[in-house]
Amino acid sequence: MATVLIVDDDPAIRQLLCDLAEEFGHVVLSASNGVAALKLARAARPQLILSDVMMPGLDGYGLVHALRTDPALAQTPVFLMSAAFANSRTIRETEATGFIAKPFDLVQIEQLLRSLHV
Image (cartoon, rainbow, N blue to C red; front, side, top):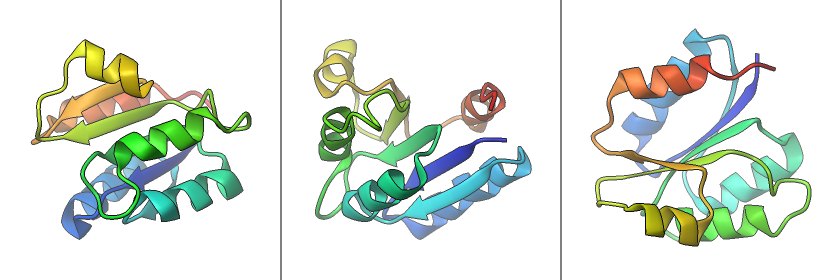
């Protein structure tokens, strides 16, 4: 069982991902924006973060940057989710662990959640 942080400003997507992570037995935290997510990440130190890119306030790119500059969270896997195309250069520049295109394939999310060994 791992702690997973789901970050998305769309309540329906956030709930869907939270429900899915809970089905795999993970402890789930959620936030509707990057500022709230950063506070939760610092307090709970999740083993995985799934974050939308486009959010009010601190967006997904800003969240990844803040996490990578925090020594306690710098190695936390962060997968960014967006309907906009992301190429490998975009992922490298943001230092995200990976990218999940929206609309996402639930099988891809399930594989990611299944891979957590904590």
